[in-house]
Structures are given as structure tokens and as C-alpha cells.
Amino acid sequence: MKNTRVIFSAPNRIEVQSAMEALAPLGAHDLLIQTHYSLISAGTELACLSGVEAWFSFPNAPGYASVGEVVELGGQVTDFALGDIVYSMGNHAQYQRVNTADPRGLCVKVPASMDLAQAVFTRMVCVAFTALRVSTIELGDYVAVTGLGLVGNFAAQLAGLQGGRVIGLDLSQRRVELARACGVAHALVLNPATLQEDAAAITGGAGVTTLIEATGNPRALPLALPLVGRYGEVILLGTPRGAYESDLTEVLRHVHLDGLGNVTFKGAHEWRYPVPRDAFVKHSIRRNAELTLELMCAGELQVAPLHSHTLKPEQAEQAYNGLKHQKDEYIGVVFDWTDI
Image (tube, rainbow, N blue to C red):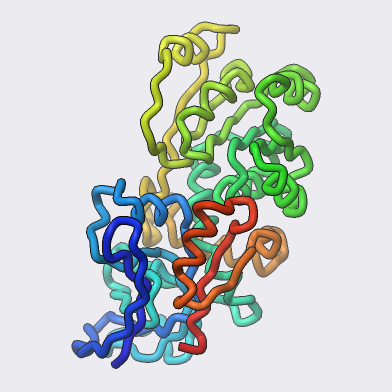
């Protein structure tokens, strides 16, 4: 069987490789999936490409979001059938193999009515979902989200669905416009000089009850921290990367003392929850994925404004360069594998 993959062969080196592979017999619980679309996760994949992620070794196929068709299945698979369209955590490859008995072998059927190039965005919504799952957001609460890329935008939309009154903040006018197109009414270009006044005008001076930090840039947090009101919470959603030196005492004073803040910090990495449903754990990545697909189908979660590019795998270098150097233009980049 010929399989085509996007490969990071060395730091900052991208290749598209096609090779004949000897396919070992499927295990009893395995699925063989022919990929239709895969989505680039810009933050993680650009970090892998640059060589700063210790867990990613070269050469390797990046990616962890794909939608495709089940073309072969193991003898004990009962929940799927040939021809099913499924979402999984597959990488950028023409064929994926998923062990459905593996606790991390997530595979969820995609509703028949869905645009598959949008269904693949499920993974980034699941990343954003964690911020909502760990938060205490209630109806009427003010919620600020710093960073309106894919994850931040979806976090802002989900916070609104949870009943929050959302203030989306980004340095990019383009991303602010996209957030507004996705229904985030209070999306603002972040101006450090007027940030507190701008937020106070929306909250009536009370501050936000929840701050979701979605940039992963440590420099963004000290700037936004004063927006958090008394007994508020800070959700660290974006993965911090890069060195940043500052006076931590000022941050701690705000959390502990200034204005009697008593602010709570919470980590919100996706893997804090199990992948499969668990009778003893309310939330799971599978549950989040299933709910995401339902929200997309119902039109309650907006994806189309964020889907900026559909490219062929052979355009991989263009895709990653765009995400790195043209961030206002390349927002949601999908690889189309249907004609490979």
C-alpha cells in the first residue's frame, strides 16, 4: 500500500514523502482510515518544527487532527462499519491506523450532514473545551479571553454558550474581526494603555470573573491580570513557550493582596481528562468531541470564518510558512487528501 505523509525530517525542514508500506494485519480492535482532511495545530506543530518540543523526534509526521473513511476493520470491531466517516487524532498522513481498544485511540463518528473540512476543527475545540470544564463560569459572568487564534476563539465561543459575557482580546485587528464574525460581541484590539478602561466600560468596573489566557505567551498574563475581579479565576489554556523574565512578586501580590484579589489559578491542559468516557469522571475528551460535533451541526459553534485555507499536502511548506509569517492571513489551515 502506498502511503503519503507530511514529514518534519529535521528542524525547519518539511518534506512530503510517498512510499510503499507493508501493511501488517489489523489487530482485532483496529481501524484503517483513509484520510480526507487533516488540520494543522499551529502552536504545537510550529514548535515541533523548530525543534523546541523535546517529545517530538526527527524525522516524524506531525499533526493530531484528522477526518476520514473507515476502509478496513479488525474482527472484533463492533461500533464502526466500513464506510463510516470518523474524526480521530490522526497525523498528516493518507492512511491512519487506530486501535479502538487503546484508551487514547479516540475515534468518533461524524454526522452525515457535516462539512468534513470543518469537522476536523473538532480537535482545537476540544483543546479549548478544557478551559470551560475547569472554570466556574455561570450565567451572566464576565469572561475575558486573551488571544483569539483558533483555540482562543473557540474558548470565547464556548464561554458564551456557557452563559458568560465574553470580552475577546488580541493584538490583531483581523483576529478581532473574525471573533466578532463568530459571535463574540465584545472583541477588542488589545491596547495596553487603555485595556483596563476598555474592560471597565463593559463590566461596569467590576472586573471579569474568569480570565482565559489562550496565547501561551507568558508576557500576556501580567498585562491582563488586573482585569480579574475579586475572587476571580485565571485559566491557563495556552501552553507557555519561550523564556520570559519578570518580577513575579507583582503577579503574586495581585493574586494574594491587591484589591483583596484572592485570585485562583487553574491549569487547563487537554490531557487532564481521560480520553474515553469513564463512569467515575464526568468529563472526557470523547464527550467533548461528541458535543463539539453536535454544536457544529446545530450552528451554535462557528467554524467557517476561521477556515482560511484548504491546501494539498504537497503545499505543506507554504502552509507552515504562512502560519509562521502571515498569522493574520493563515488562521485555520486544512490539508485535503481526497485526490491523493
